[in-house]
Amino acid sequence: MIYQRVIIVGGGAAGFFAAINCAETASGVVVTILERGAEFLAKVRVSGGGRCNVTHACFDVAEFVTRYPRGAQELIGPFRRFGASDTVDWFQNRGVRFYTQPDGCMFPVSNSSQTIIDCFLDAAKAAGVELRTRSGVDRIVQRSSGGFDVTLVSGETLTCDRLLLTTGGCRSAAAGQLPSALGHTVEPPVPSLFTFHLDTPWLRELAGIVIESVEVSVAGLRERGILLVTHTGLSGPVILRLSAWGARVLHDCDYKFPLLINWVPQLSPPDLAAELQTRRTQQSARLVVNTPLAPLPARLWEQLVGAAGISRDQRWVTLPRAALHRLTQQLIRTELAVTGKSLNKEEFVTCGGVRLSEVNFRTMESRICPGLYFAGELLDIDGLTGGFNFQAAWTTGWLAGQAMAAIA
Image (cartoon, rainbow, N blue to C red; front, side, top):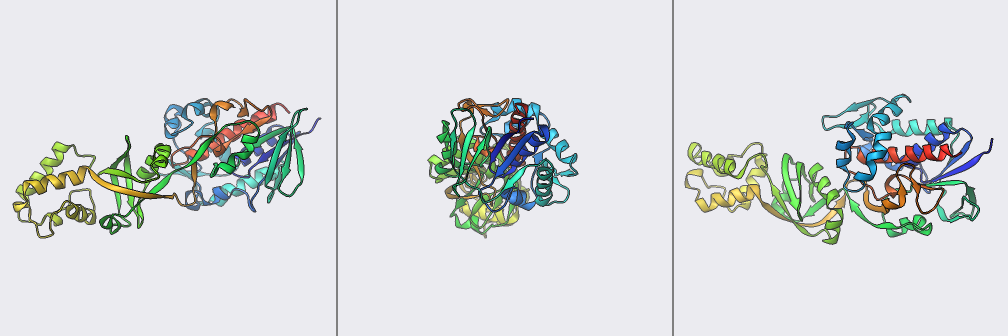
């Protein structure tokens, strides 16, 4: 048997998934993972607040790909070959069990990312994968006879027949140097999945409040969902989705832009007007500030009333029509000035990476450099929160692992 060497640069989710599946499929292949840091799977450890949102309980490919601002079309075929249900089966066959939250997010029943890390480390060792930390790659040279010379920052040079790059999102232009040196185009990296900074005083007083359904819009983009008010501004699923779809547009605005919020998207303007008119007639003696409109939290209602220029001692019976109009507008079209962004905790996702047209999505092999493969966030693919980025990592890693094993 001819032993051929596969080197995987990057010891994260996609790298481990590829390594394990390659080594298990072709026992004659020597597979090595090179991780520049001191530990493997660091991002897996912190993901999902330390619980690891492994995938999402959506098993229809056409629906699943709608959660990817970039890469949706390219992922249709890959997800049909290895999708969310395959991921669940893969882990369950190795003793990992999952539960599904009402929002579709799937977590290990242990509620600990360590379960996933242990699963990977055990499977990699059982498959004979060589694991090396503190092994950053300085440069890669394609050999004229085939294969690659991989030189580490330590000066050591390794030779391989096939090479997989899974170095994660291109957080800076420098992170794309390895694929660029091998002839690939790297789309400029910009952050995705971030929260919004606002300096609005009355909003900051509401830190900790959760509103179950709002509609937010900016630059022609619109999202509806759960909103969280923080001590620095706004977060929650609706903001993260908006930041993902608008990653490049918001970057071009230098993260300074007007944000519109409809606090009561379940009510049409005529229904809202009728609801407020009912208060004028049926609760006429009560203070406007003390009669919140369900399902808005009372504290939020008070601030919106104040933002509409209505005093705290104003009663419905004497509320001028002009003030009623301002309140209506405040409820359906609050305009706030966003002044910056923050990353979504440690779960940094980037928009940008290796140009997708340069990769064969049946095998994840480069169309430019034979023997070179890509998987995970190094590609110009990013998904919404909810397990979608991990699923893209599992799928592209699996395809790359199978392809590298098939030509051993």
